[in-house]
Structures are given as structure tokens and as C-alpha cells.
Image 1 (cartoon, rainbow, N blue to C red):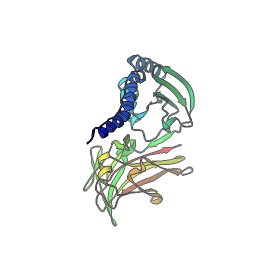
Image 2: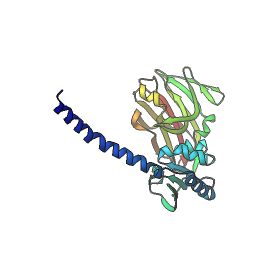
Image 3: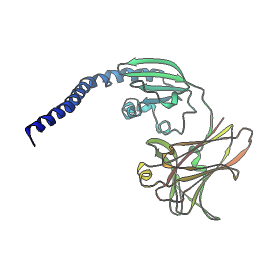
Image 4: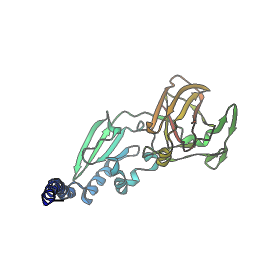
Length: 286
């Protein structure tokens, strides 16, 4: 290569690399000013603890702030809150946030207070809340679980707090759906079978069923759709195919006027059953 071409390449490299180096140097200089300090967290923590009451919801935003936030305020974020099926039951929502991040939970809510603590902002929102009459995950101990193949239904046996099925174990636990914790009934799909979960409950104004696909690795290695069917007293009310990218699906059924006890049934199946791990939750709301 001639000296002329070497000089051209050096000039091009300098034109590309020097601006990038300058950008990185500026970013490194400004970064400490954008990081929340211990004093910021102390102020935010004190404010939340002063105003937080039982039944409030606490969220950290953006989502990557959550582990750090819980290291300061973990006693206010129990597993039931972290794994909640929805935000419906919460009337007051506290948000500890950075960089003007707004969680989905506060869309349509009214901002009541907002205070800055260095790089952190503590905000309190209020919204109408629903009354949850029955949480189906909480009532899993009273649920009936079975595997249906063709016309043959085999009940799953009680095994502690879980149900032991022919090829799987259905249990209540914290699942992971789209990288979010969800407290749900975990129902692995058996080959050629349909997993049926039934509850006998008093219905209110609305029945809300939630479903998702548990486990990042399982979603990575399999892409077959999950078929979800919801029935009341044996009559199918909703059916849908659920794919990897469908997240935490919400199914609402109006049940106002249905008095007395009714059987709510959720069935999940898949043509390609391998690695299909269904997470199921539900609420009877008034």
C-alpha cells in the first residue's frame, strides 16, 4: 500500500474515531450527575414511608430501577404485590422514578403530589379501584385440576399445595411472563392433553382471566401457540390462541346478574406441547 493511501486511511480513521471518543468522554463526564446518590434514595425512601398505607401500590420506573428500589423499600413490595395480575385493585399508586419515566399503571390516574429528591422523583397518583371478591390464585387450594385426552378426564391428585398430574405438576407460584413476575397457577402442557382447572365461586360484576407463557428459555426454544378456553358452568365463553409475543393476556367476561355459585373453568392446550408452560390467574371483580 502506497504512502498516499495510508495517509487517506489514517485521515478517515481519525474523522470517525475522534468524534466517537469525544462523545464517550462527554458521556463519562456527565454520567455521575445522572445517577441517584445515597442522599437521593434516603430522601425518597423517607417520603414514601411517611405516606404509604396498607393497600397502596409502589412502582419503580424505569423497570431497571426496580431491584435497586426494592433494596431500599423492599418491605413495602411483598411478593403478592410484585406478582399482581393487574393494577385494578389499587386506588393509590406511588412511583419512585428517574428521567421522567411513567409506568403504564398510572395512565388515566390523577397526580396528587410530586417531589424531587436529586435524581429521583416521588409521585403519588390516585384512580378508581375495583373490589376483588375472589382471587383465583389465592383459591387454588380449592380448585380441581384434571388432564383431558379425548373423552377421558383424569383428575390430578393433591400433592401438598400442588396437583400431581400424569406427566406434570400444576402449582401456585411466582412465574415469569415477558420478564415480569406474575403470581399465577403454573400449568405445564402435557403432550396430547388439555389441562383443566376449575373453581366454584360466587360471581360478581366481572370475571377477569389472565394468561401468559412462563419462562424466558421455554419461550426461546418453542413457538407453538397455546390455546386458552374459558367456560362458566360448562358453557364456553371465550377461546383464543396465545403466542410467545402476546405477553400477559387479559380476558374480561361480564357476569353481573349471575347470582349464587358458578363453576369457572380454564383450559389450556397446545399442538406442540413441549416447553409450553401456561401461567393462569383470575379475579372476580365487583
